[in-house]
Structure formats: structure tokens, C-alpha cells
Length: 147
Image (cartoon, rainbow, N blue to C red; front, side, top):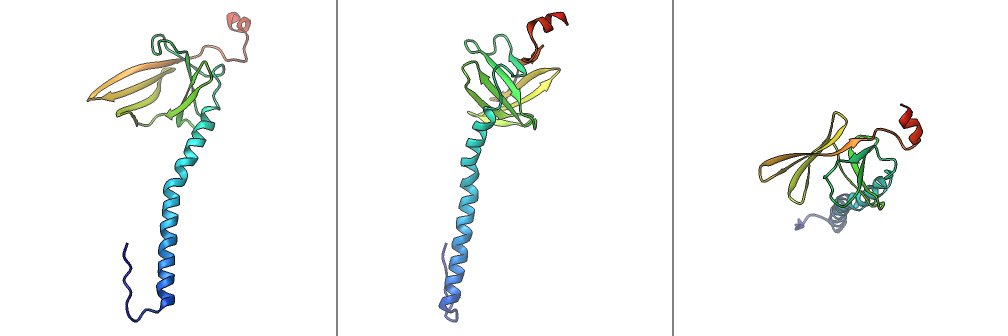
């Protein structure tokens, strides 16, 4: 960024122009970096909103070999929350494409199943991540077997 001074400009005009340019740069920098830090914290807090025992989707057989995973869809239907049985959780987009490790992915619902489409090297793969649970956590096993 270069500042050219015209001979007829006064020192007061020059400094006000410089100050306004610096303020504009600071605002631009804060707008670019501020939400990035806030999103990490927000994502962590959103991922904590889903409990393993209250999750509405259970991982399908053979999807995750040694780990038990359950899934929730956020209230605003924009995110899928993965929850492991040890309490670890993370958030990925729902109903919109996202790229992770060079692989294009899309999570969606089809007939009560949570589906992930992944495109890598031009090949699209469809995987059933989980199925809707048949009973809610507030029901007892006796209530479930009676129905």
C-alpha cells in the first residue's frame, strides 16, 4: 500500500486519510480472523449438545469397526454431530457439501437412515452411517417391548 502526497494537501488531511486506511485494514483483519476462532469454540459447544445415550441415530454394522458411534442432527438441521461412546464428539455439515482431507462429502437423510456420499478421484460412494433408533432414552425396555 503506497500513499502519495500531493503538495497542496495539508498534514491534517494526510494523517486523517492514513488513519482511516489503517482503521479499514484493522476492521478487515478482525473480520477475517475473528469468526475463525469463534467457530472453533462454537463447534465444540454444539458438539457437546448431543449425548451418546440420547442420540437419535445408531451407527450401522460395519461402518466403524472398533468404535461405537451415534449421531444427532442439530436443531436447525445444518449439522451432524458424531458422538463416540467415550464422550468424544465433533460436528460436520448436514445437507450441504464439504471437503475434508481432499474428499468431497455430503450427509443426508433417506428413509430414516443417515447417509454419507463421498466423492474421491471421480468416484462417488454411498454409505449408510446410521439408522434411526427405535426407542427414545426416556422409555424403558418394558415400554419398548410392550409396543
